[in-house]
Amino acid sequence: MSLRTRFFLGVAVLTTLFLSGIIVLPTYRPEWVSPYATGLLIYNVVLAIISYEVVALGAKGNVMSFYNFFMGATTARLFMGLALFLAYFVLVQDTKADRVIFAVNFFLLYFSFTVFEIIHLFSKLRQNSVED
Image (tube, rainbow, N blue to C red):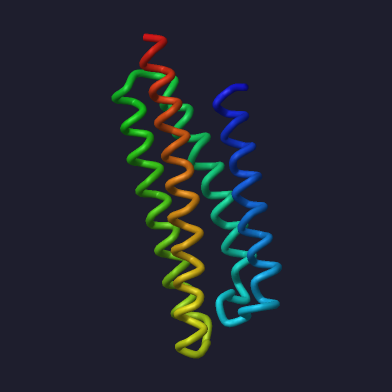
């Protein structure tokens, strides 16, 4: 199975796990899930896929190219996440508790998908360094 296929399969599994939590958890602990959790999940899935594809293109070149693409994608991802986070706090009028839940949901999904993507990208880098 190729690394790209494993990445997309892993994204599907991770998305299914989080989506299951978003659907089931409100039954028992509704205060733990933001009303925007599904949107945050979609945002992080799309961001992870785009970021992975961009960095994978850079991994086809030399190692320095990989690092440049990786740092660029990571920086773009960080700023897009910051923009979404700030937009929520500026535009949406929620209670303090709702804002805390949004922040927890946001960072849980953001860091989970970021770590997942990094693990897969470094396995791709390892594969490329073995081929060289």
